[in-house]
Length: 297
Image 1 (cartoon, rainbow, N blue to C red):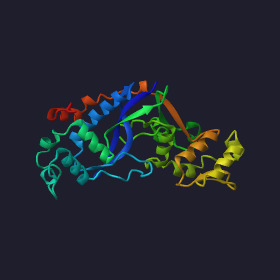
Image 2 (tube, rainbow, N blue to C red):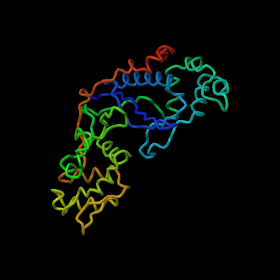
Image 3 (tube, rainbow, N blue to C red):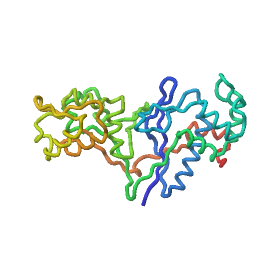
Image 4 (cartoon, helix red, strand yellow):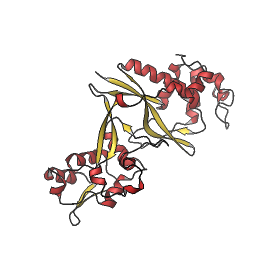
């Protein structure tokens, strides 16, 4: 039986933008997509009313091919709200002025959940998302450096707990472990998260050093993967596997699949073991509930 989970988007504030940091807290688990999407639409509505018109820009829904370089434009956002309310744009968004200086609650309170949903779809943006888990799959993944490989190349005395090094965290101050949907996501964040520089570390520490037949139980297959991946090379003279920064998550996954000691571990974590965040107790939700009708469909 499929499960549908709601996760809150992670937004990490950086100067004048809110940069995307993946999916963070687990908000709910549902047996039907309809129920989950109803909740997603409601929570998106609430957070839109409260947070969409901050001075800072938000990244749009993350697209792996874009690497997060696309942001919501305030002009487009205001224009869509004006269109939904059938009012002149200048009435709610004076040129060369801050957003909604003319009584934002007056206008935003008129928006229904359905209208907000349409605006968010047009912008390709959201605060919450519904993730579908396949039949009989009720787990997500944590990303972890393989201690059997990394412990000999890292001075763990700098860490009060070795797991502070081994696990990949999201960018919140609370240092919570990053939890993702798929193994591909594990490798994606391991490669592209600027906080970790995993490819630099692999080359610097020469983690995969030794004869091919010592690095894999299937050396012929390992050699084939290296031959087919331009971003992975075997330095015959030094007997070490080397990487370029162009390596893809799929290539690193393929390599790990045939290594005797893989680089990364993708640990399964049951969704029932992940604490649910009661979003209705959040500051944003409570403040919005004081100003708006949160059940306006």
